[in-house]
Image (cartoon, rainbow, N blue to C red; front, top):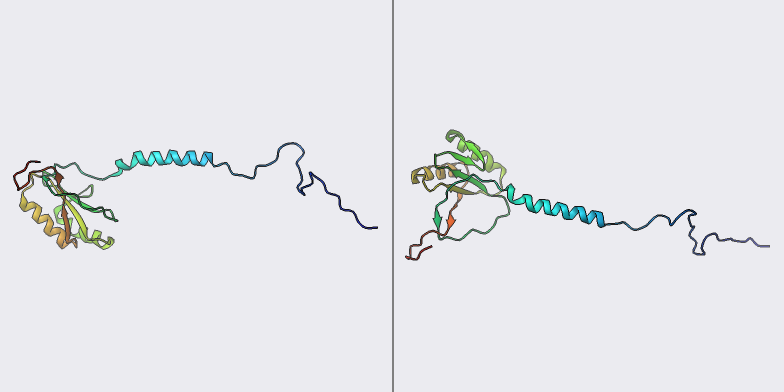
Length: 156
């Protein structure tokens, strides 16, 4: 007189589908890994092209490179013809200080790299350094190329 319980399926309590193997419960990550590797290669190729810079003939010195910073440094460039550039944008001399003040308000660091062509008179470099100081940047690094003469008489 009791009720009977009848199991359907393969005895494991799961039902089987009639027409095939059923759905896979595991995710196939191979296409995901393929896409990630392709994106990695694209970024590795494109990253060196993203560096901003204006071609300028830098003077050579025996000083070593500075350690890398966390924030992208601000670069001011003086070209051989006297043109002043902030990163890759040309700036008129009379608007340099207001633009520097606006940039200084948005940045955490007051460090700036000054890249001056070797043919620029020293007076012009000092004038731009004064403008940088008036614009709120008092941590100025002069950018040079390595391999220049030393004062101890040794060569490059």
